[in-house]
Image 1 (tube, rainbow, N blue to C red):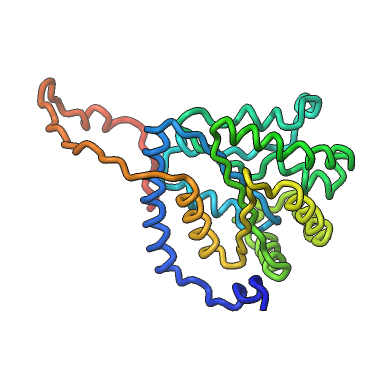
Image 2 (image 1 turned 60 degrees about the vertical axis):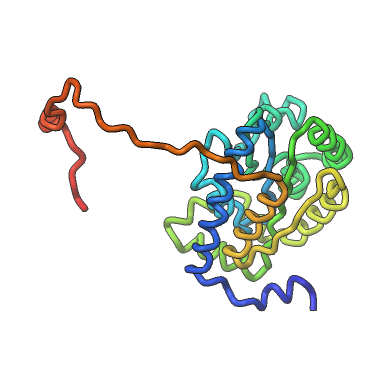
Length: 269
């Protein structure tokens, strides 16, 4: 039995158990945040994968309890005409972290190895050149002190179909359907081949890829957060004990009466 088959047969994680484990991991992410700030670390986390594999939900789980000043999310739109004329990786590099920052790329320079290649937005020569140069660029990044974490989310054919259908039917999910989603569904095997070429060329010792089977979203999120925490060595920093000061009564007045006649949001709930 393959790893994919064995994972598919597991019972879905119960919500209560998931939320309990997630809270513990998010608390540790807060500890990691303080360590990264104190030590001036720089980290990049790349999320790639098939459409509807769960990248957005995973990023939300990582970032919902930490500071956006430390954990910055970058999700770039299609390049402008000006950006198309620049060196390919240039528009990504301007978002790289400074000391004390973790930058999360919701899709990255690997667009060239995936959607751009499959949909014909780049030439075969540009694709080949990217696969040749990418490991060298990432080696330069890592040697320069950046912690680089690359995660590929892999969803099954059956589950991707179910998620796309849910997006089509559900009005609060329809915004998730991009112009590339339906063509990507049709071109499943083209994307598989592009993925395999990308992994063959860029799964290096200095910047390895880690694959996550994401049919079970909850397990995938927990495993990814645990992987990030394990990949960035950190310790819990001792915080100074905080004591809430008493409110000063100097200059006291009825400060609620002064706003009573102002416009308030209507209380409908």
